[in-house]
Image (cartoon, rainbow, N blue to C red; front, side):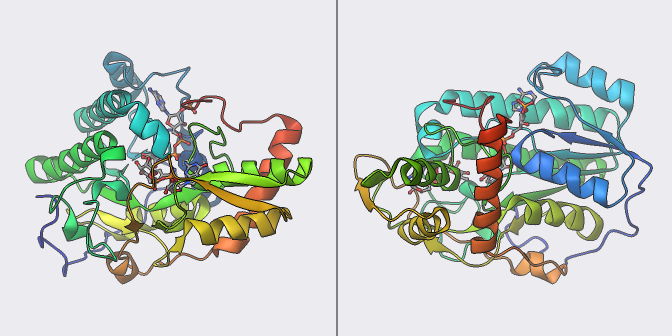
Length: 338
Ligand SMILES: NC(=O)C1=CN([C@@H]2O[C@H](COP(=O)(O)OP(=O)(O)OC[C@H]3O[C@@H](n4cnc5c(N)ncnc54)[C@H](OP(=O)(O)O)[C@@H]3O)[C@@H](O)[C@H]2O)C=CC1
Ligand SMILES: C[C@H]1O[C@H](OP(=O)(O)OP(=O)(O)OC[C@H]2O[C@@H](n3cnc4c(=O)[nH]c(N)nc43)[C@H](O)[C@@H]2O)[C@@H](O)[C@@H](O)C1=O
């Protein structure tokens, strides 16, 4: 189990495309990833999409989750609901990230099993890998070393989810799969300064500094860590692709295959928003993992590669952010530290 060389060279393909008339439940359909998946499924012709906000259905409520599956009997499910946050939120609230994510995913996966969901995709995260995993990180690195302490609680919950999907495959023979996304960004992201990931945090910080003509901005850490960034629309496309083309026990890395330093991406964002002041670094804030670059050979072997370049994706996300702050639409309302 967990992908230690079990099927690396035996990528198999699902026998048929998904039925566009089947009920498809997107857990977390209002989030960064879930909303992109929803858009992608609509454009692919799925006519019976099922979604519930956390206010309508708290996925930590086991009976309520079972009721949803009993009533709607989805044939397909993507689990894109989770408690999600950047490095500081993860480090500050580890028990919340561990407990809520375990409960959400166990409830959804148990209900999907009880009602015999035919195809299911569970979303983990690249933080499941050891802090000092060899780069680029292959799927087989899982459980080969110590986790990054700023997100170990969240990572353990995600690893449990991968295991549950693999266990269902083994015990029940259902063709469920897991994907491990790299760091994601795009429209609908969480832009709260304390709770967000680095890209939305920097977009907001540099945009506000440009507007107020601030002489300097201060980012977290040293700026030397390397990260790989994937646009949420690419992520959504990869999710549908994997559901239709991949059927194996090993989780699949989803990324671009390219990384940048935080300093480099900060300079790019400053350029996109037109900020010309100085950038300072607050070394009292954590750097986290020194590098997180996924090996995407398995994903590529199924026939998928990312198509949205970082500069292009940042420019459109900045546009979205500016229009959402003008219109007051979702920028962070339901997020940690908002
Ligand atoms: N963003 C990233 O950089 C990365 C994300 N991922 C993974 O992708 C998945 C989606 O993340 P992302 O879209 O960024 O996260 P978001 O925070 O944008 O969205 C999470 C969604 O989960 C829902 N949710 C959270 N708690 C509950 C609950 N108790 N009951 C019901 N719904 C709940 C929220 O619903 P509502 O909006 O209604 O409150 C929200 O729609 C997660 O599994 C995450 O771990 C993996 C790697 C990187
Ligand atoms: C997706 C992933 O996300 C988290 O891990 P992370 O990759 O470390 O994510 P991050 O985006 O928050 O930071 C990336 C880097 O950027 C630096 N940084 C600079 N200035 C800001 C800043 O203002 N905000 C943030 N958040 N980071 C900043 C920061 O110090 C770090 O060096 C985990 O929650 C993990 O669980 C997970 O899955």
